[in-house]
Image (cartoon, rainbow, N blue to C red; front, side):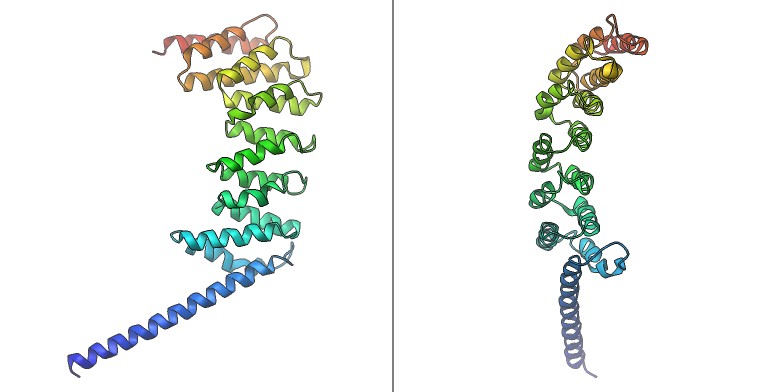
Length: 265
């Protein structure tokens, strides 16, 4: 067999392989579409293997921006179509991995539902690199039930949402103790001068039920200010936490905090 015939056979084999790959890709795309459509009837107890093509597509589209965007949109659209609670849970968990701004609206719509709020909030929290995701969590705060409020507040604190400081300051005075404690803790995590001002102003007059929580949040806030390089604001807050009426452990921690702050250049 001469070299010309070998070359022809090699090209033919390559063409067959390419055609097989293309057919496989089409089959995979069809399988993904079928799996996504199956979410309409998916529920607890159904064999999760039926959703395996979605899992594979998440892996396969890691370096395929267009494919990933298409997959995300399909999942977000399904989430907005009124699927079961178990299907919502599945989709939200996948959007925690691949979600971007185009998923925010569908996820935000679940925040006020007690059955789906937490998983939707976690998904939004994982795509907080997109400003609209954090906006959605913040905007849900006045809309959710008292039961859900601490979770929403916690997410705002975890992601240090400066825009929520005013709302959280008001919520420290809420009659629901869990809400008030969560608001104080999140202000501590946000750790800005405005958050420090709010905590310092509340610490001395906080009702007994949240007094320790507010003081502890003040310590967290001072540490955050110091970590951010705002030594003056941290020391001012520590001084406020050494005052009369503060829990003993808070006074001790505030004194240590002042010494630490003073030693920093």
